[in-house]
Length: 453
Image (cartoon, rainbow, N blue to C red; front, side):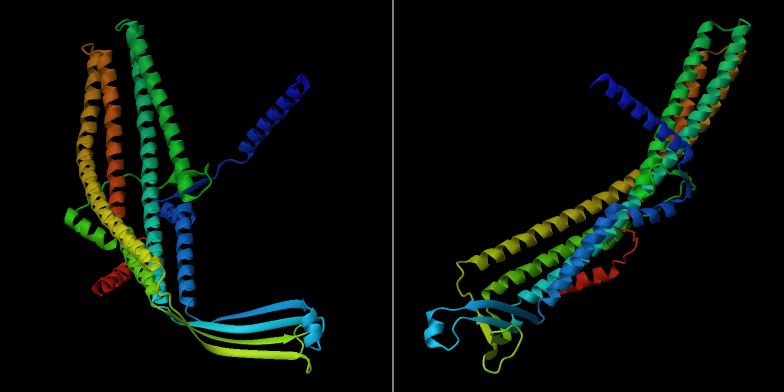
């Protein structure tokens, strides 16, 4: 690149940077107050994972629609146009070389397919129900993800408050140390150590503010708002006791988890495909009717040169020997049933594990909330005592700084315990399949009917 082009490019880049800077100043990021419930609603409307699952349900719906229509009559029209000639026409007819146009209107309808159409319809309906359950599962997953990120953002916001308090505390302590140093009661090393302590607190605050900005941007991405939107979260991290047994939660999960029900529907759909494969052993019967017209001009009758023909009847086709192709289809369909059953069993096992894990995590977080709360009280008292001892000349600066670090750590542990409790409560809600939009009771009832057959 020559010098002229380099300078030109540099000017363009600098101009672009100035434009971006001016634009950022002129168009500040929007601010929005938002509650947890509002964040979940936005995520359910805007998140692409939900949109993908909704499109999957639409696809399954139209596949079911297609399967149902396969048993209805099919009407078709065909047309051919040709120029005909040769010795046959010259010697055997009076036509000679001529044009020939043929139009045929026909209708056909399957009367018996050996159970294939019925099985395909049943399988498509089951797959459509499974897709709807999968959509509900996706919504529950997005609700959990949104809730977890909302609480994570609250945790990051609380950490900012903790580190701001740490900076204020370190600043006040440095003032006291400087005052004592000026009158010769403490050494210069105390001043230097306190300055280092303040610097570390300021760095921790910068990191906390950055973590909060990242958390807000992530929450924006989940709920579908512009990535630079300044969200003002209206809820707080709190603690409410959750009193349910493992047996109760597991029972609710196995009855209501949409992915568990969807796995059962996949098993039933696979069984219907076995029936469809077995139809290859049986004959198929179709009804047909057609009407055809032929002339030397398209779509025009000619009294001397127009012919027509119609036919109506039933056709039977039976592949009584297909070199075991049907058997192979049946065995493959049975293998698919086994695959679906194993997948359903694994899903149920995973559901039980998720419920137990969430309950154990809730219990641990609940205990940590209590111990962390007491730790904060003790750390506050210890810090006050260390300050008094230092001011009286019987304590050291190191004791004060250690007490300050322990106080900051205790406050962070308390907010982390609150965060873990609320996040694992959301995980338990998801593990139990708590409804978002779809009431799964009807789907459960239909499965019970199928299993009773």
